[in-house]
Each structure stands twice: as C-alpha cells, then as structure tokens.
Image (cartoon, rainbow, N blue to C red; front, side, top):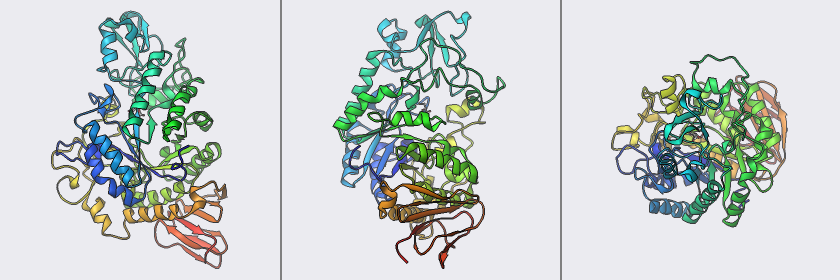
Length: 521
Ligand code: GLC
C-alpha cells in the first residue's frame, strides 16, 4: 500500500459535469485542473476522475473506444499530465477510471471482429448461432433486455452486461489480459496515482454459459434494474477466479506507488472482501450504504457489515454517479442536507477509504431534470434514472450557476438555487461546505480516525448510532433525539448545532452527528 494511502479521503469528480473550461457544455480536464485548489482547500486527498477517454458516449464515457486516448471534448493527454502535476503540487493524488469489462462497439477490436478477424472475435464473448435460435442463455443486461445481441458478421451472439454498444471482453483470452496491463502501465506512466476499476467483479463468465436461476417473479416489462435484481447472478458475475486476475495489476501498482480500488457492486461483504485479499486490490467499494433511506436499522447494518468484514479495506461512498446523492436518499431539501452531513460524519470516522462525490460537500440532493440522457433512463422511460445524480456542479450565481458559458449537456436542475453554489456557501460559515471542511479537518487531526484504532460500537439501538476508536467517539442520531453517557470530553466536530455534553451526558438533537474527543474537557 502506498505510504500516502492510509487515512486518505477520496472525492469523485464526474468529469463531464464538474467544470467546463471551453464553453462547449461539457466539463473537461482543464476545468478540473482549474478547480483543484478548491478540492485541496476542501481537505480531500484523492481525486477520482470518471472516464475521459475517446468514446461515442452511449454510456457517457463508460463505452471506451480507445483507452489510451483522451476524448477531444474533455481535453488532451497533455491536459491530463498538467492535471496530475498540478494535483501533486497541491498534495492531491489522482485516480483514473479503468473500464476492463467491456469496450465500445466502435473500439478497433470490435470493428475488426465484425470485419471477420477471428483473433479479434475471440477477444469478445461470442457464441455461434443463428438469430432464430435465440440468445445462448437467460442472462440479462443491467440496462434492459438480454445480455446478448446477434450480429450476422460475427456468425453469432455477443455478450454485453451493459448496452449492446458495450461488448464484453473475453478475459480468458491472454491478449485481453496483456492489453489491460499495458493500459494500466500507460496511465501510471502518464503520472496518475492509481485506478478505480469499473465493474471489477464482472470480468469472467461461466465457461459453460449456464442459465442464471431466477429468485423472484418479475414482469417482462419491469424496469431493467428490477429484472436484473430478480436473478441470482451466479454465472455471469463474481466468479471465483475473477479476483485473482488483478494480481499482476497489484505488482505493477506496487512498483509505481499506486493504488487500486475496485468497483465491486456486490451485496455480500464476504464476496467483496475476496478482492482485497493479500496481493490483490488495495480497497474495494462497499455499496449497501447507498441503498438505505434515513433508516436506523438499515444504515447500522450496512455500516456494521462493512466494518466487520472490510477490516479497513473497504471504500465507503457517500454518493456516486450511479445512485441518488446522500441528501436525496435521506429526504431531499434542507432535511436531506442535514441528514447527509450527519451521515458523512459517521462514515468519515470508519476504518477504510471514504469517498465523497462532487456536490456532497454542498449537501446537494439530486438535480431535478426532465431530460433523459442516461441509457437506463432511456430504457425505462425515466422509471430508473441516474441523470439526477449527474447534474452539473453549481459554482456561482449567474448563467448555469457558473458551470459553463455554453449550454450544459445536462441541465443543472430546476431545484438548484444560488444557495447551492460553492460561492454562496463559501461566504456562509454555517453552510454545508464549511461544515464539510471542518469535518475533514477534524478527521485529519485525529489519528484515532485515520489510523488503525479498533472500532467498538457503543450503540446500535435506534435512534442512536455510536462508536469509539481510541479516545474518539462518533455518535449520530437517526430520526429522533438521544442521549449517551460518555464521561468528559469535548466536541471536535458537530454536523449541526444543538448538541451538548454536560456532566458526562451527550445529548443530541435528531439527525445530528458529532465527533467527541474524550481526552480533552
Ligand atoms: C459502472 C459505472 C457505471 C457504468 C457501468 C458500465 O457501474 O459506474 O456508470 O454505466 O459501470 O460501465
């Protein structure tokens, strides 16, 4: 593990929605570079950039047609070098997003396969067969419909766990493994400090292509996520041999003082933990916290499992570009903001790597947009959509709240106001932005929270969630006020006003979290 990693806090930049430097409506790499001082001042350590590679954009950059080329909408390779240099000068580390499970159907390999190159065809998961025969098995695409599309040019069906425009690669093929090791090497040489690995758990499939069992009855026209969830993904996801594929990546990372973090979208912590065994990834995201409302039992369980099984090797997303923002999950508006700041306080004290997503520091809920841009939204007529969590960052009052001088690729959201912007919040010491900065500073100042100190739960009884690490206590109320006997101490942080610590009793109003230093009065 790189020496800079322990205790680090990550920040997800959804590049196309962060900051537009040239007025084309898309956030870009130079836009991120310009805002790096803002992130350094915020107090995060790692900046993860979502894909900026050459891509037709069917899945907003997760359909990569050249993993070594920067899409001209987002800048140039030199812009990425400048971003890395600027980040390093500010003490920040940079992660890029590698997408090894699939490529774009416009990638040279897939085009070559369609043109009849048998060696290239073997780099994809293709099964001989006629259209009339139907797909080889019952596997589904995450984004709706079967995971198979027929192409006469291929003489059969090719597999895609996502869009038909995202053919899955065949990770049994050594040329695929060699290529991605080389892509990793390429970006490490450019100067990045690590990788976020897209759908880490998806690379291998059952060689016999057996049907997945259904675990729930589901209508044929149910939304894609609902249908996908009605199946046990025993043959298309998370095969036992998948985690070991990353051993050579780890060697390369170690040689470059770089870090590997997996997007392991699995709900069983024991399965996630397999990816962070010795010699594999440094950290793996634990996502169940993104699936709870403001529900004490559900949050407590998701945190407990992640702490117990993750043992400091799990990444904790506060929000992500694939799920609703924390403030949205917890009710939206001012109440959602208050709860999200409390949640962030609890998560930031856990062992592991917390990750904010852009806008979390502003307490943003989802942007309200009519547009349907996300392929999931298009497939479900808007019933399921990731658009609202991807709306552009509000920087300052004025046109498009300072995101772009052009027309934003996705509207900012009819609910966004000047009060949501960085500029307005920077002038208000009680804002979410200042609260987040104070939280990050308080955490950084407490080795109990950034180091190895064991976590002991003090309360998992509704409405209180509290734990102790060393001489530091983190406590949060979910839904109602509560008290906790603590002894003497003082507040190192409070997510909102109103908490007291008198005569050894901590009293918290509803939906507030505090960090208490037990050593000081
Ligand atoms: C990951 C990404 C998501 C993308 C998918 C397919 O889950 O986070 O945005 O759609 O992979 O690449």
